[in-house]
Length: 488
Image 1 (cartoon, rainbow, N blue to C red):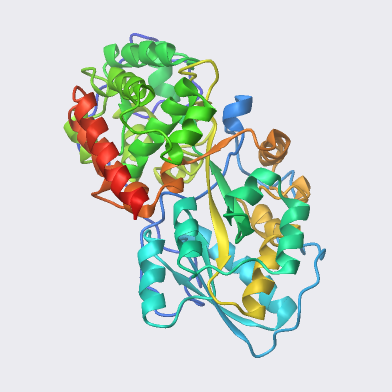
Image 2 (cartoon, rainbow, N blue to C red):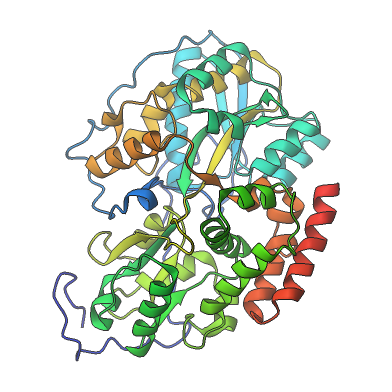
């Protein structure tokens, strides 16, 4: 029997622990026409590294609420025209990004507006999750896309060092400097040269929880790591595995490490480790891994145990917590703002059956780790530079903002473009935060270390999840892989 989400449950009414493997990710058909502009497109899984943004939630302790548009901008209202673009009639432009499904459909609206204003013909091609390999193959074949949206700072730097990425032209650079804080400008640069425009960003310091599981166990939102462990034990004692981990996707484990490390070691050490200026055998890494082991290594903490976590893909980790909201397999799941889409796909209601709290403070302050997608030109053409200029303007951001599932770091974007008060508050807080954040560490690393399945940091942390007692061994493994990747 499904319990109404707002009903207070007696602590005697037990939420049974579900048998392992009971959760199944729901799938849905793509929106009509979503692949119309894709040349040679084939069905692809939704990227799990990019999606809707609830930026600055961690800093403010905001709660996820409904996403209706009744109090926001009128759906489909025309975007402002704040930037002049050249006429590009007859020119063709190919754009590559990881986005599929709804994200692809919403980005297509942005490209449609660019076509309307310039007369250019734009085609979109999904890259798959490994943008570095995708672009490398296209470069080798002599047909790179004109513009790519890259999800990793390390890949941007790789493209710049190889001469694949082209510096921003004067018009695009002017829009970037006018509309973005220095922190976001610097993230799109390499060795002092501006290459990219961060068009979409994300907050990766959130823990989503099943309200029924918390209510039954008498658990409350924790503010510190110690409180998180205590609340997890309450949920475990009540008969539900407390934490679902998508360990089959190694990137989720890097996000766990980064949040613990940033809060515990501080931003200066974080920056040093991100640049490999200190080794992965540093005592600060030891402390972070030992802290993670307090959760990963404790019996009864992880849904399906450590072996089960290693066999769980990220979307399925969300389904374990929300696929049957009244009788969940897990009480909570850690990951970024994009979890909101997976919660909805699992059939749960945001704000009622699923709520969110900031990643707890391990040290003095709670962490704020961000991610994002940066647009870079791979062909030195007038059309490519014009698109970057458009993406750096509030005009382009307005289109996706009013469509939903998106927040921009563009400080010139009118917050009225967002579909409701929650989105407007979050966007306002993000802009107000300025540069008080740290970008995903693994995304800053060379792709060979921080961005590929079954190798580097992804593989090492999967090995650590398998055996959290081997801290020293994992540190040696991480340092050996990092040294090799940063040297190349």
